[in-house]
Image 1 (cartoon, rainbow, N blue to C red):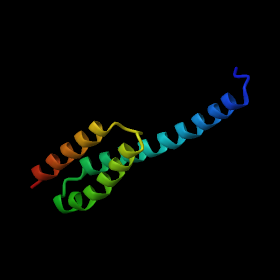
Image 2 (image 1 turned 180 degrees about the horizontal axis):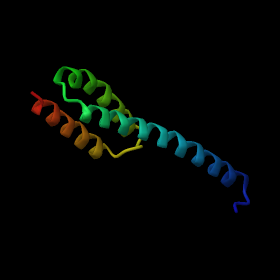
Image 3 (image 1 turned 135 degrees about the horizontal axis):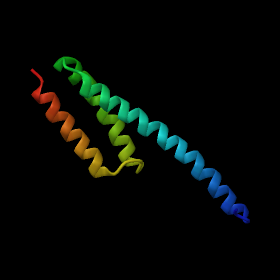
Image 4 (image 1 turned 90 degrees about the vertical axis):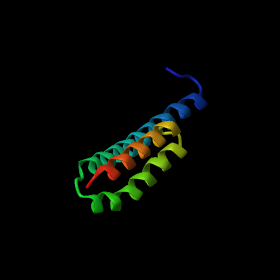
Length: 84
């Protein structure tokens, strides 16, 4: 176990950040699943900007990698364009 005040604080902060990142990561994944489950193009087009906003925000704060964010956005755009 840590002996220094600074390392104890670091442990507390890391735990707090981990919970924060896990929550927002899960929220983003649920939004992506909801979009992929949509079969109506109009509804998918309405959801897409919201999902992209969440993905970009997580990439900006390094919760997910920027390339993963770009891959997700690209695949979702392709999915929406294939909808009839």
